[in-house]
Image (cartoon, rainbow, N blue to C red; front, side):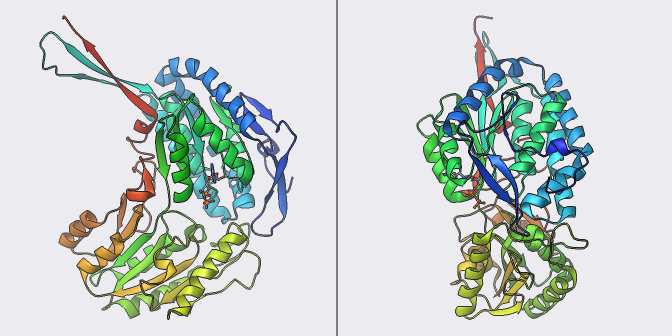
Length: 489
Ligand code: ADP
């Protein structure tokens, strides 16, 4: 093993289909690397469309029995899975840092966050219930039953190798659905370790299947999931272009879709804000996971009266609190970017901004450590014509724009196809309601840069996606309503 684990059987490199560990039919495998060093850490089974079809069949076979269990039964198994995830949190965190690069403390935080969805939906499994409606016809009785939608296909990204899986799989399984999951090619180890723990928890064969594939075969696996008439629902987290492809591919079979796509989060600091709190929130929302989350702030708008002070304080805070390095090293809170393409995109955004007149207040270049490490960067004097104001940077770059007028800044904040997370700082209660209502976003953080937890409905509007994950609403996407009309009473 490339790493010391308490329980080495959590290090899995084969896919998991119908309760068995499965290699590709042609024996193909793909390399997974450690973003901190570029070193190969595992060769993982590289499955294709045919194996995806087997997984779909397995999920279909398991569906009947799984949906027939009581919610209480499914809850007990999910609860056991939750307990096992927490009991193995250290190992899961190490695997995550190894394949994803995020600092170990952040990985551990994600494991606990990911587990919270399993706990939450274990609890919700017991609360699935229907309604009796008040019929307009005295001789009728009208019932609404809530039923699982069926076999679900799930595709997840690399930035949260654990939580994006549990946030989809836990509500699916709680609802009585079975699932075929294709994790990101960069981070399959976290997914496979979760499958190992699901098996130990007693989740029956076929209920959760994991199909691993490299980037090329992922496309084929995605096609197989979307095209299958057995798969009734696709749930995806990733980029907006891929979300569009999956939606298109799912049109012929008219699947229900949950999509958590890109964002371009604005972070607005008004002149009445608590500036120290705003700086704190800015660092948390911008540099977490090295800026590689879909709710990370992409663009800061700061009122002209506090602009200079905000930029100065942000630079101080970034300079004093962010330590770049290997996620396993003590005190590090910014790891490497996921791959070379991510570094290239960050460089391109900075170059474009500087060419158009922005000035670099902090960072601005690859870190002296080399590889995929990048300096936490702040750009001032930023204007709307720059790439970083319209494209998701997905890296540790904070472009700061000066604004004067409230109505205008809201226009700018909303002038995008995206609508996932947004943030603003103000202490005026009237303004807080006005701005929270005016922002065309699925989520608004007011005086905080951290908004995600299992109780909150996570999701976007516009081209940031469809549906909500987590919360009391999160199971709706995995269920159908059935209306039953009893006549002649
Ligand atoms: P990112 O840019 O964050 O890697 P992607 O949307 O490219 O986001 O990837 C998210 C997930 O979607 C990964 O699991 C990846 O393998 C998968 N994926 C990428 N392209 C396709 C596709 N054409 N069909 C199905 N899955 C895909």
